[in-house]
Image (tube, rainbow, N blue to C red):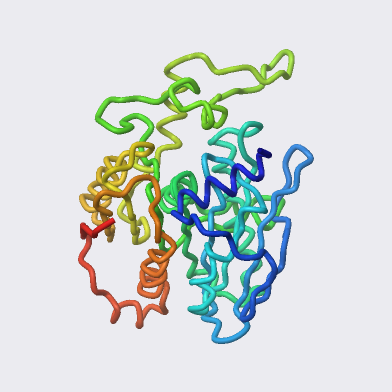
Length: 329
């Protein structure tokens, strides 16, 4: 099985989609611009697809993190992941990042920040409001969504590249079963610092390395304190502040890959910090479930509420900060 096939399969399994995937060809009702280059690194182009509704466009963008196990592939951009948003007038940006085994989590986070800056810089070209951007994803894609929500940064006004002068902050987040805390993974004090702490198919994403000053070779980072600091810096929960965007999480309480503890502790931190949040617990469900694609409608509702123009958004407030809801899986 090729790596591309594996990532597509993994994403489908995460979304509980066991039926055949729809064709990648454009479907009626939207236009698709493929392989837009949002950045380059080490001779590699970083790309995203822009999917625009042909009618009733809201002028609002939502960003799909195409990532499963920190592997990303253009072939994994399938209509089932974005069509519900297009049907409701959203412009969708499907972001493919540099992925493991070549790149590790800190570098991947840099990629998706770059993607948001690029989208915001070109907002006029895409006919969207640069101040109303949402982000969504599942599993690793959920982690990256939360990193943008909690640790997106202002641009550098002195940057040579005008894209880097833009902010990578987003205004709303929605995600499925995300890892949120590598220092308390599944239970308090359970650290995941080394590549070997993870299942083999994910370990390369955490094989942290840095260039040697003398030789220029990329060598493993062995110091546990340094690895702990990297784990802390790449854990969304450590970046929660009162100005974070409204955040929706959906997680199965029988998930054995990413424990629901990750979403519970994260939502609790948001609530205690005063950030509007909502956690939907899917009773009896694991890391994905049949019909999960239907839960994307809940994401659409969340973005409708929080990416509306200010006056409309205020009138649409329906859920209190810190709501936890349980649903059948």
